[in-house]
Image 1 (spheres, rainbow, N blue to C red):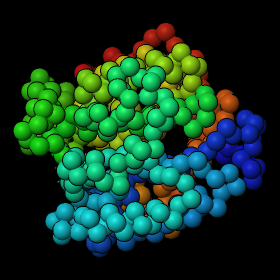
Image 2 (image 1 turned 60 degrees about the vertical axis):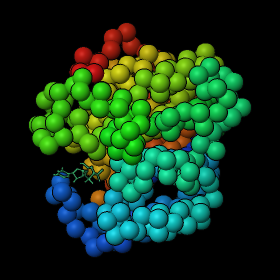
Image 3 (image 1 turned 30 degrees about the horizontal axis):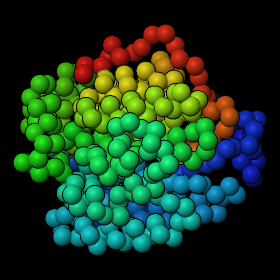
Image 4 (image 1 turned 135 degrees about the vertical axis):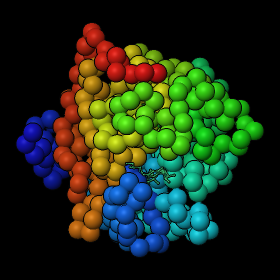
Length: 353
Ligand SMILES: Nc1ccn([C@@H]2O[C@H](COP(=O)(O)OP(=O)(O)OC[C@H](O)CO)[C@@H](O)[C@H]2O)c(=O)n1
């Protein structure tokens, strides 16, 4: 695909954008020398905040200022916990984010849970449910007036009358973050018990249960039902929906072991609603892209932490009448993502759960 062309005001052959927003993933800040990860990939801790600062500077200066930014999780690295630097490092990154002229929606990844408990996160500045569109609460039968009632961190908002953004919690089913005595932890273990898994063995990619690893997670039944309700409303209201979570949900949209435990169930939910346009994830630092058989675009953003000096990894999404234009910076490619009608068949044959 050739370079998508836009003029200084974002207009293109697709018209003028309804709105724009920023996306960024896996900043993983730590005051630590650069070095190899356990996966033998290079991690540039010295660059993570510089890259974030550059992204904010660019977003602040854009002709059409992004309405919001989706921060796709892993904002600070798990190694902060060992040095008892979790709170100080988080404060340092959030102070930088305060210089942005638009709100950030924070998503929680595995590194949030290496540093903090779920209870801590719920009361922290990384809980951005206050940005949800409360006027829509009455439209969600299961939300009971507020997302505060939920045992998972997910919400939605409508930045334009015909568009909705849904933030999902891909560590709702997880052995990270929840107290061992909690119902959520029990349900997560029950899920794993019903599957073949062993956290001590990393099976080859593509074999049964290869993705049932501690650093992945999934969506519980309640969250799936809530998501289905919100999407049903969006279908009826003629909205286009963009969903964001930390973990990729399509086996072809990632390169490594990063895949939600119950990706099949999540995919089936998304694919049963015509409103869904795109799913944004992070987690797999090498990035990925796949357009599934229902026309849903799966974008896995390259990770800031694995972006060498002189590069970066973030993007601005221009939301047009006929599609989304992802204008990538650094390692993130430019892509035009057209909206498309549903096809009859479904590709969940690849999905084991
Ligand atoms: N070979 C390895 C490497 C790591 N682990 C353990 O897995 C956990 C998560 O690793 P980490 O690198 O911190 O996860 P990220 O979310 O930063 O990155 C995911 C990558 O993008 C995957 O490609 C941690 O507990 C490690 O100790 C391991 O068991 N074996």
